[in-house]
Length: 133
Image 1 (cartoon, rainbow, N blue to C red):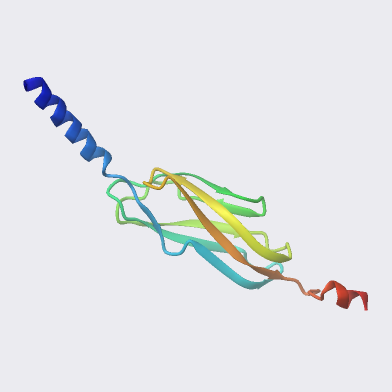
Image 2 (image 1 turned 45 degrees about the horizontal axis):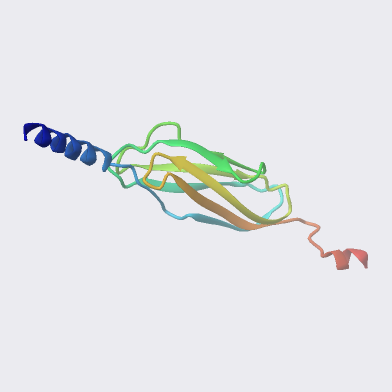
């Protein structure tokens, strides 16, 4: 009986320790650039908060394209604190922006997708039909 009680106690303690996970909550999961001029500032910031009970460690931030460069925070984010993931899009590429950035962390949702969208407008933004005339 004593062994059973000890096993149950250890199981209960380990379960309560595991339940104290980090939780990442973004202020917005999509950033809309709108219409931006070619060569303009392509840096945007995703703000997030660790609403969990354990430090949040972002291990990797990956972009779906080489034209988008994400930068993750290096230090763990304490419970209740906020952080920023910076994303730089190459605005020298004209046309629509539709990119996904994947965030890998120790949060309860270990993989999270955030997105950027918009359009880079060039000075010579005439349509193909207008250019032929």
